[in-house]
Image 1 (cartoon, rainbow, N blue to C red):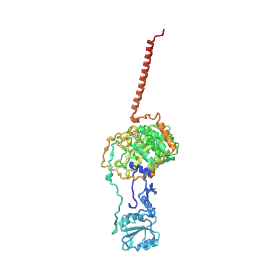
Image 2: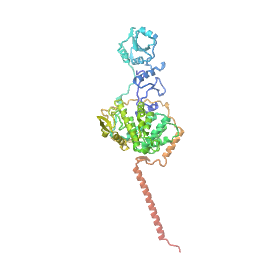
Image 3: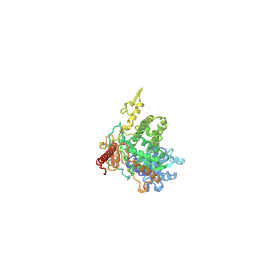
Image 4: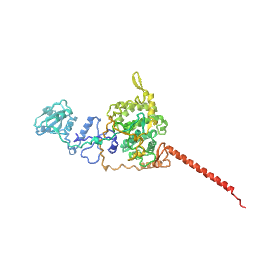
Length: 588
């Protein structure tokens, strides 16, 4: 069908495609868009509308889309798809020419005739049309007793029904393609890019599966804040409330490095101070991207998976990092119960789960995944009464998902979906009762609290602030990367070509004055006397990275110098007075 309707796929998870997916307003995956022939001005296309996403439904919707073109704007290679009238059939019966004519009789709801018509586009010496079964008497004259049926008119003028094993599309198409003198045309279609030329070297990073990696959590945050949420041009109502609550939980519980925690805290305070019920997401992006150069905040602007890397670019990655983030937040809420004090979530053991649930339902790109998670939440999330139960609830549901996706096309063969933790990670978690494998939930809880604890977080491979620009220095651990392509790890298929929209789209919408004012006030507060206060760990100051120890030494030296100067001042002051008394001569 390629000469009538081209089919292409664009992977929105790849960084090089994210700008295109944003401009075309793609929120969820998979999203189907249709673009009419001869479209000259930029358009985001027509959304797929169908009861499901089965292959047959998508194919039939493509046919409807083709058929909805007006006569003058239909693709030139696409033959007419509307049914012909009985009078036209009679005219064809008198046909003599150099080609075959096949008439597919079917009912009004059938797509078989149109599918056969499109199947035969690349073939010459044959024309395929379709007719409906409305006139029963006419069908009887032709000997058509059931539909679908195919009536064939030969070049010499003879005609009659064809006999196929089953009245299916494949049988009809195959029979017609095999007729004498029916052969493929020489079609000129755009050449597909050479995969070998575009293949990229896979950068494999060695990692310890018993550890968590900051790079995974921060890469997930980068994708969440700059890609997934950025698909929404503005946020209002329930969407804005979901974002505020989710950022609040992140700001209070995220266990990462100080510059990232400070960014989340800044974002949370700014969102909480907004008087508006609707904001353009550009304003959030400006803060996340630190366009105002606020000291001490930073979040990597590129993806670098470590524990979440897959054998191909499209496997694992962001969904894996999101699971790790959610597990970490439930553990932090349990081990640091005072962290949520003052947020309105302090007495709610389901706070993290419910916030996570609303985020997945509202923003997560995989719509089907969100629906499955919502079903699990409705079943049993209300049974969670303590923070420890929240940890175990999420662990159980993650294993349910692993069981459902085992063997699925999305499964990475190098990292199969298993019930977790595996015996090699936690032998005490597994036991047998009457010969049946079961979990020791007490040991599982202990393991989860240890595995997702901030003390188990490694900064290896994490991006430094110098890495955010072009040509930055290598990140910590980057020198350990091994550029290799294991036999079981084929190159990712990175062929998707970014078709960028025309410049007529113009710049992004300007921010409202009230929002600018709110942002300016926030930035002024951040640039005030307390702007450079250390939050623990390394933070940039005057272009140099000072640690907490460096700052402490500076303070100690400053105080010591001040005390020394004061002592010397009083010493010479007293000595001066004594000298004056000793050499004083009263006047006579």
